[in-house]
Length: 292
Image 1 (tube, rainbow, N blue to C red):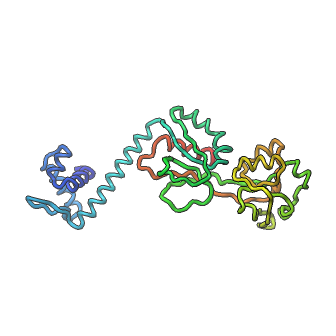
Image 2: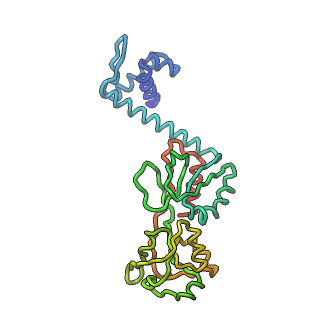
Image 3: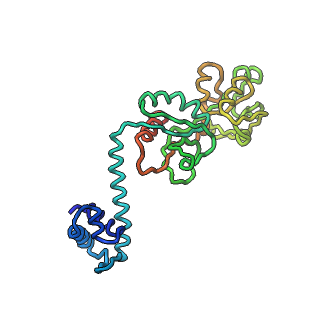
């Protein structure tokens, strides 16, 4: 007899209240259902059910074994479903969320490659700098920057969020070019939030230096910070993917290229769905391909 079949008969007997009901639900005879139960009890060396002509009840071990059988059967069913899904082409709408700056500057330029690769998938991308509740708000995945709190979500690491210090040629012509990080204290620095205008950390040959910085402008949007730098409003500390093209075009100048700046971890997170869809799997694999 097949062990999984016997487990299934046992689970049905517990849930339906009798071996005869389990047999009827499985399309087998009551005698065969009894054989399955006896096979399990012989294999385990202990009784699972106390049976009388009127009723049955679980033994102490039978209760624990019932819970384990249910979990084993669930995992087997999920594995079979996953194998079937593996054969299906990704399709349907994929709802994801990402931080505004990353989504605009880094994800959007490569999204056409994903959509060309999977023509039956449509993407609903919501850009938001707050941490959304994936299950509550109906998202299948999120890209998150920074350390992740403990949660039940599955997280896959992406390339860390690397930073650059830049200013426009016009600003540097007007205010002078800082030669070392300590020179930043005499400059206008533009930042995302008040906390980012307190101190910048850079690491050189002599180790890490923490530089107090200040400025008269703070902006809660990465694209606006880039525009502020391009228009000579000050020095910015922003992600390299946002500023690198401006540096290559000569519209911004990278400062302190020999110094290392702290990076922030970046991850794609998604709920531990029992049946992970081909479209979600394809998108996660695509992100790992593009940003790892």
